[in-house]
Image (cartoon, rainbow, N blue to C red; front, side, top):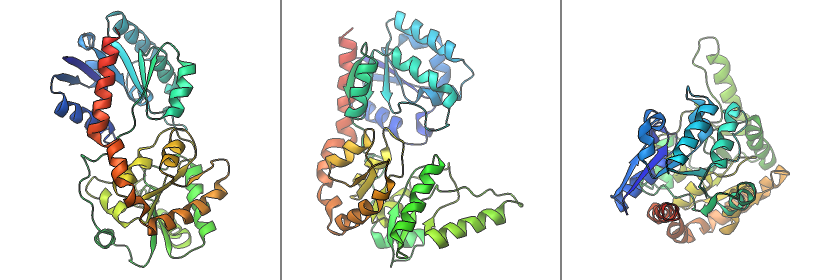
Amino acid sequence: MPMKLFMVHEDPWHAGNPYIYTLIEGIQRSHPDCEIGWGRELFWSDDIYSFNIVHFHWPQTFMGKDSHSETDLLHHIERMKSSGVKIVATCHDLEPHYDQFADKAESMRIVYSHCDAIIHLGEYSKKLFEQQYPDATHFYVPHHLYDTVYTHFPSREESLRYLGLPQDKNYILCFGAFRAKQERQLIISLSKQLHDKNVVILAPSYMNIWWHRFRLPLNCLQKWFYERHYRIRCTGNTWRAVSDDTLPYYYGAADIVLVQRVKILNSGNALMPMLFGKVVVGPDCGNVGPLLRHFNYPVFSVGDISQIVDCVKKAFQMGREGFGIQIQTQQLVEFATTVIVDKLYNVYQQIIADG
């Protein structure tokens, strides 16, 4: 049946990752009768009351960049609900990451506590929230692979050439922003434990180089030190994402992928390597641990990161045996964008039908 859906984001195509816009594009392809809106101005306007569903993603980030208060958000949601709008949220986080928009943590509580339905990317948060927010209906809809975005899969040789990397090394890829000192310390500790000059850690966002005449020499020296001493290679841009054109070359060059988080609920970086047939090592926490264990990937305890070196060695062995490629078809069957879009659309229909 026709549906009007609003995704709460200022601009899904400039969100820092493809999560929302790939779902929008997938729904528009498969279900053209579904009208989808987004945007800050529309969210706060009276036109929002014409939508069947208002779907929140990262409310703390949305409110952290907004001039409205959290009280405004509360009253706005209450008016939407009284007008018959269904409030839905995807549980990307239980709380803000470290100090990022920590002052807007109340936005998350307001949204979650007023939801008609909460969508989870794993069973861990679903079970947790079923107890915490019993008035909402809870659904499990997995994170999708970005198979509609990344369709070029360069060879290892081509990738190393593109990135200017030597061919006689083994590469561990750590993608995504380094959100706290603990995450940087994790890969420094790994480098020390491996103590192998043939293993290089590709961490594009490890540190930032300030292009200031007084800071630049020191930053460049520090970058050189990390590369020389710990074999950590970075781009010097901590918050600028690797472009969609360049990203496949990083995965093409990598022997294995490491999710460097020590405090996490979900991570697209745990799923993305599957699209490229790579073995993943990650933390046994939140929804990430069960996802990796589901495919028999190595996981380490965040309470004992000394385990990580054994996990990495095991992952290298699994990679050499072609394990990542062997289970790639199964992963595409479970997490392809078209599969997840249909699951999400069915959830929307059920929410509306339940009244």
